[in-house]
Image (cartoon, rainbow, N blue to C red; front, top):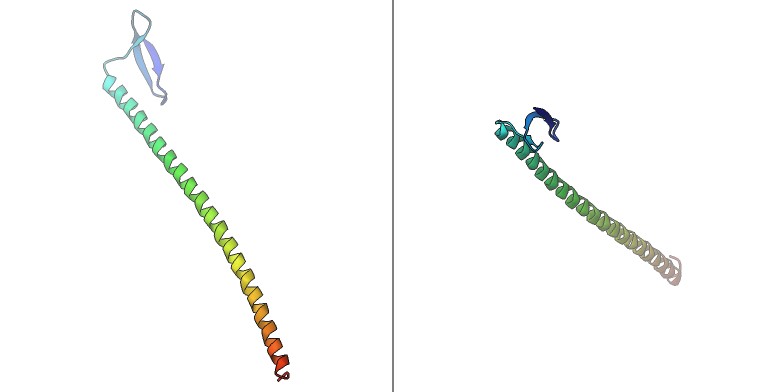
Length: 101
């Protein structure tokens, strides 16, 4: 009899066959259930990793859009300030032309 440790830390006993390879005992369904659970968890991990990658890509897109919007707001603010200065200049000019009243 030999002891084998599965990747999940579960130790199972096995009998060594004539060629030295381990022969699993009759509780193979329990071992198969563990293997099935491991595979299920691996699929879950892959699924969640894909979700994380998708969410990171979406975050990058949001950051790019935010940068674009901030630049657009800055340009609009600059345009507004320019137009306000033009209006002030026009009003002063109108007052001077009308005699300062």
